[in-house]
Figure 1 (cartoon, rainbow, N blue to C red):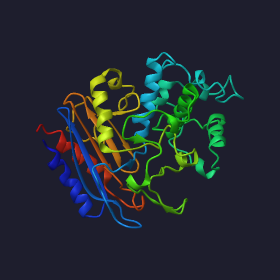
Figure 2 (figure 1 turned 30 degrees about the vertical axis):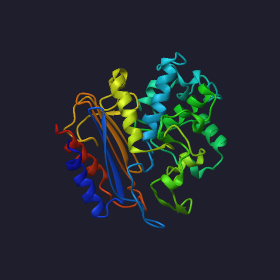
Figure 3 (figure 1 turned 90 degrees about the horizontal axis):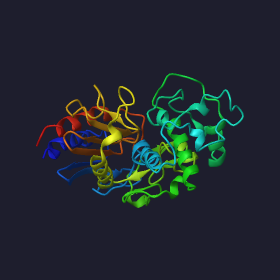
Figure 4 (figure 1 turned 180 degrees about the vertical axis):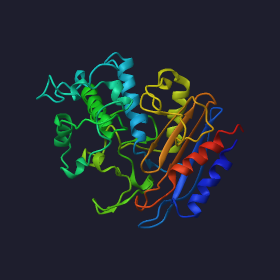
Length: 324
């Protein structure tokens, strides 16, 4: 088992002050292995990291929750992946039903980030009423651009899930260890937020998800390393469509191994992964039957510094890919 070798660069990053703390979890041979170190919080008072510390998963929400929910709805026959979003959201761009590019968006294109929508928009600066912001997302004529990794794609998918299930995202069923409404006492802190004027702990870091009510299709989920390894175990058992490339670097929701990516260069080409802005990540290697999650609170107390997170993720992935 190579987990101790993989954890060595994490310990160095903590010792150098680049990140406050971390949890590394590895799934191999059906068993979970966990290492943890550092602090879950530095401000206002230091709190030690635990193996079961709950992290703001940020964009891991896109794959761990939203992608899974959409694929489940497709498996139930509620939608088809190549259906337009309007089968779930008939009022999408309802004042331009004939000429709107948004009304032609499909579930597949949004899942694989193959749309004209922008990467991100500071919606929280327009107001903080969740219903009004959802209406704004649906009725805005989004400026066309090249296909990029887009939060807006998954905000739309989150709204579609709410419409199709009749339940708010925060009320959706989740695997054990995952939550949209965690206990702050169990959580790693994220940023001393200048917008909200406090250290965030147990409330979503992403400003747009916060303005949308705390749970959105692109961010808002919290969870532990063991919970994420449980998700990975289910995906390893299921396999199949989740590995089908939709572009050179993406499957449905996930990235797939490519040169320079965060999973490192020594994993198999049958590896999928995703990262979160707060310092989280999950990777699943179907060829080696191994998964790992590296959870850090690298934005605590501020995002405005170089934590070296990309280099750290690649170093951990490279060490875990060595057969042990």
